Length: 423
Image (cartoon, rainbow, N blue to C red; front, side, top):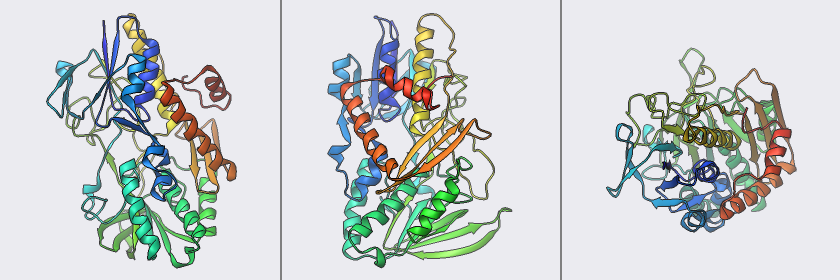
């Protein structure tokens, strides 16, 4: 008998539990450990922050779902991973032993790395969690009653840029619906070397499409931006030239601001030699397995991926939903093989596919593989992207409620579109 423990229950952890269940022998067992009792559909957070979704719309209590599938569930945060002893020490003091561990926690949000950043003790909002988005919505309603300048974007070291663009455009859409857009100057501040870089060196014509969209929506932008500090109602931003010198400095006034932070690994794993890199991200090989602790796998935003290229301001690499699904599928197959005495052989595609919603339209892109040179390098825009993302939200939440992995027809469609989960 093998005990498989999945640490984390988000976009990576929940599908991991479903896929892993299908790979088990009769005598094996899965336990999911999470600091939340619920699953949250993170891609909908920009909508929640302007009031288009409530928390109850995009969260699902997990215990009933897992109980139906015979999967154990512990709603308790992890204080420490102890790989030498094959165990987790939870926040409550409880210890959980494992034969295989799959780390799918997502990141810790590094608001503290910039003075005044973040919703707790700082001056900016966040859409990284549904609770952050709910709080951001309360501030949004106050702002709309007394509008003024907005500063939105992603700080140095961030590795998830799509939601920043989404939220900027969604705010623009909502402000126009409320007929107060004319009262709101908006500035997009990003560490990217150019608009549409996305941590991927651009995909198709994302640079041209996003610049055009921002011009049409009267959103100014500052790229290669380093946020020095944030004060109440004022953001201090430096533009960094290619040689590292400060080329310009800005003091940007705001009445409302949302800035995505840099990510780092969670405290429970940081500093474990051989398991994580200096930022605390899990080191994995091509099979999603840690080279030192070979009974530990990892999927999702918490894994270490080297930056694509040197940029004037540090830019991280995103891990999109379909990329995570390919990691999940490979990990499940590889652990299933190990349980049967075989060596891991599956390699995830790490293709990037994204639907970026703008409230009334959107941009979609496909990078295959994620980093150039690519076999496929495609982007498109239009109202269809908005409706496609709404449909995907409903579909994904339905799958979670039913405890389903991808059905056969979905795998076929993914293969036809080049977003295969496995090589």
